[in-house]
Image 1 (cartoon, rainbow, N blue to C red):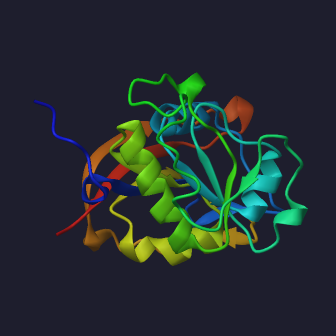
Image 2 (spheres, helix red, strand yellow; image 1 turned 135 degrees about the horizontal axis):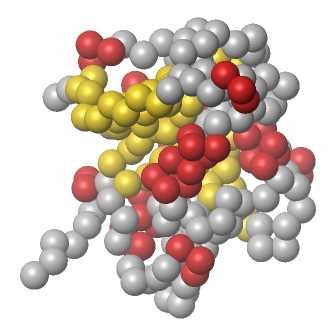
Length: 210
């Protein structure tokens, strides 16, 4: 018999690419282009709820496909227009178990993508957890930006961190990682590509120590 997932079984993860100096972005955009890291992001988050700040969503312009998109914003009117957009003030209104698209057997293309809009990080994460239970997923993701990472890092369970072997000029930075607080679950090195001016980088998966 398969164990039913509950909120307590849901892992809160952050996924991010950072430079040696913790840079993650500038002028509300990316400051490098690493196709392999983009594939890693998609592969890791596909089919699972993700949460981001308003500026991160505005830089995308639309929900990332194949996963429920939760957006934190105190000013919903500034979000890009999209017919499917709904505004939720509590998690119950976002989770409708009777919706045919919300099934544990649903393929990513059938997932409700949103965006689902919340005014606080706490409410957004609570709604993501409920959504994950309905979808049969065991993980939810923080995907940026800097302030969202900073506020959620103290209670994040897992980090997927791509570390680039280069410093970058930026105006958004990831909080300093205290490596002694984490267990390195996996580490995969990739070599530099001088022809395309791409530095070497490493994929890390870190689980918080008990």
